[in-house]
Amino acid sequence: MTRTSPKPPESCPVARSLDVVGDRWSLLIVRDAFDGVRRFSDFQRGLGMARNILADRLHKLLEAGVLALQAASDGSAYQEYVLTAAGERLFPVVVALRQWGERHRFAAGERHSTLIDKRTGKPVPPMQPLAKDGTAIRPADTEVRKLKQDIDTARTGV
Image (cartoon, rainbow, N blue to C red; front, side, top):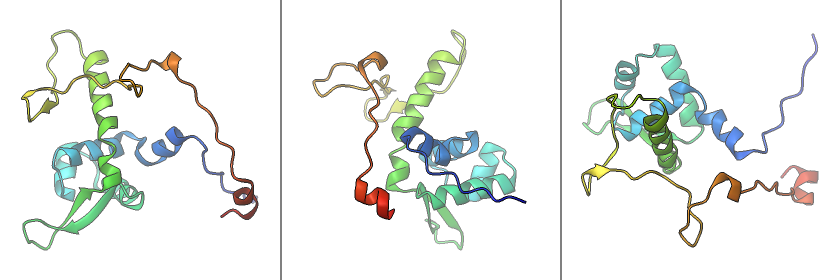
């Protein structure tokens, strides 16, 4: 049996992000955490997932620093899953996917949930990347530039 060497880490930030939240269940767990779900049984009930799959995804999100465990807020012996600062930074991703889904995955007039700004009571405006001057950035206005690795880092691996 031949052993293969481990795959080198992806150099693309999108690919590395998808390693953490790229499957359906992980992103739905994050979505539910934003909606206030904290306990294993509540995630399972809301998502209808098998216990073993939920346990695996929660473990991966904990390892990746997206979620953390803390003592239950009601003082019981349970533990709760809470978003970390890194997990909360996924909010724009969840909002963008929600808005894309509202626009492209529902028929005209078909009922769906809407994200509301609690301060105004109005739907959250569509997300749009903006330039420093406040103008909208379109895909054609951008390019990906690969950064060269520091030569010393490449040699030492540190």
